[in-house]
Amino acid sequence: MPSDVVRVIYRKYDGSAHRDYPARRLAEDDLGIWLGVPAGTESVYHGRPSVEKIPFVLLVPHHAWWTGMFNPPPRTSEVYCDITTPAHWESDDTVHLIDLDLDVVRRRATGLVELLDEDEFAEHRVRYGYPEDAVVEAEAAARWLFGALGDGSEPFATSYRKWLALVV
Image (cartoon, rainbow, N blue to C red; front, top):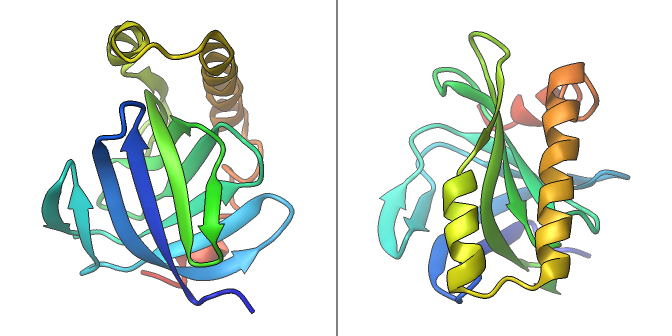
């Protein structure tokens, strides 16, 4: 039986700390594993202690180069996707992800979809020596997400709301 609590660990490609927090396993379906993070969750962001002020749900897809964070108001991003390496599950209760800088975001108020941090991706691609296959996969994931967040594809349209309702 999988653990009810999952430690989510994001690192940068050079191994430096990015994000680290506990999340509650909500469900697993054909899309991946849904994790809930309530407000007040203690976390680490860029190596510094932090506390999540706004709850969210994280989708860790099976074998995809991204994760999806689904947010309630007042967060301005309704959906925030990090381009990452595919999830590596150390065990049922620990998942590791390598953040590859690019983010695809859908703004709540306008529905505008944005690709963020292309400059950081370009800089880190050189500095950390991203392998070419990782670059190709990251760029393909960003293109796919940009379309999916804009055209109403699931899970980005409404299916995430049932999971988000469990943590707000």
